Image 1 (cartoon, one colour):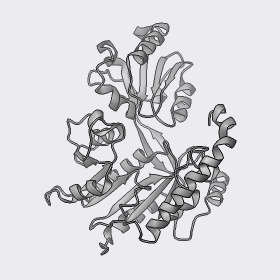
Image 2 (cartoon, rainbow, N blue to C red):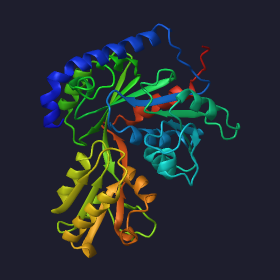
Image 3 (cartoon, one colour):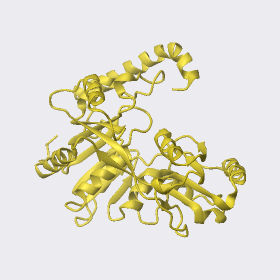
Length: 365
């Protein structure tokens, strides 16, 4: 948390209390049936979190896609944050980040055979997905960032929390980042401590487990980020390599417009001594001023020898942004990531999800 916000936190705590009261009343209305929560005739797996900001939801959605897509027709329903369209949009292979949001665009680009739709109204989105022709209708639907969308009732709920800053160490908005009180984690079936160090010591995992204080029915898993080989943001980028193929004297401009850029920045700086980092807000739309700053940085780094790196989510926005010079296209790369389950828990997590889908029976509500 920035130092300014830490100083303001005592002043913000009353606002957090009022916000928390409103959230608790809303949840009570859903718990008592005073507000409707709809279930559906297909497995609906929610991937969400309690915090505002990144916790690795998109990589977890992609993990579930890889697990399920060879067995079932998979659909993904997201809000499509920061898109320029409205209402329900069914993604196509030509859809851009402006059409469906950068995260949905990333998923559709990686898995073109998966049905991806966006709608801020999740009930309407579900109705439209389930109204598709039978041969296209998803047999399993993944609800991206849907933990607070209680009008839609998931059949299985995965709650992610950043392993470096678990939700029990946080506070409610605006003094902290929590969208709901920590006790609301009890609605989840599976809790995932994400973004952990790949070499997380068992003692530290026990500290996190104790702090989460899960209920008997909840399962806990720990995951880390795996960095994959670089891919060109544009088709004309020349072949390059991986993070491990970087040299100490490689000149790198690293662009990040995600919620938690620190792990990638740290990974790149471990391998090169000449890294210039430009961080932007999550889902940032790069403008003329941003491009000028990048041009200035590249001039300092000898343009002919420099490499431009970004995240996969940034790449989704860069491709459809005409401001990026054509001369940069051959040396712009993104660093794909995947979720890896730690402590040998992958088989257990996979079986929990697959068993849920196999045994799913629609509820009548």
